[in-house]
Image (tube, rainbow, N blue to C red; front, side, top):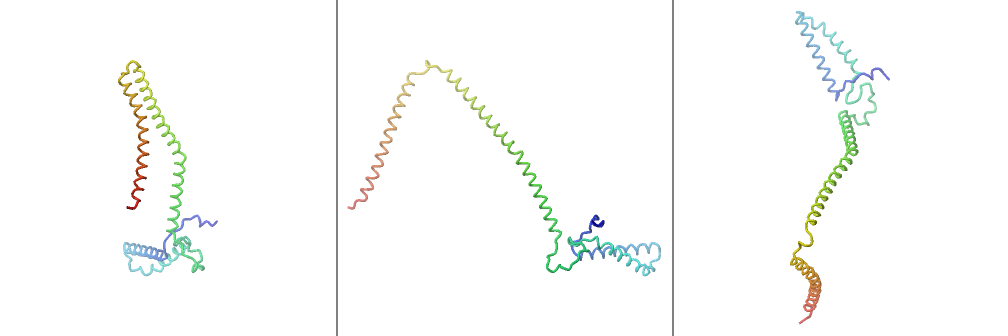
Length: 199
């Protein structure tokens, strides 16, 4: 592996961005030259320094070019077969990788929930079941204590007689309900036959 591969690349989106960056650096160097020449009082020698500054900038950009990445492609790669190939979109690539990282994070979180949530639900259901069982036990003990307080001698004979009458009447009522139902069915059948007769 080449030692230069270990160095981080300078990433720009387009070739125009790289040219704009070169112009900005050149302008900054020339402004600095003017400032230094004015501070030393030799601003008339600017023209003699310009070829040296331009040569320095050309060398700087030539050295920088191999370490440059434009829209995800290094400038060292050949551009011969680019006609049939779609240009690489580095922003889209970063977006895809961030979505992939987010998906991995969600998968990890869902996996953790799958391991812990069933035990939480089981504990919750067990607690509710225990509460219901305790409530039922309390009701049963209350009813037993209430029934044990009432003995057979405390029942009123009129209440017993009314209860016996109600039971016998309910048996008669169930018989009369079935008879009335049969009569209603027969009536509706006869009614439809009478309506069907022609006058």
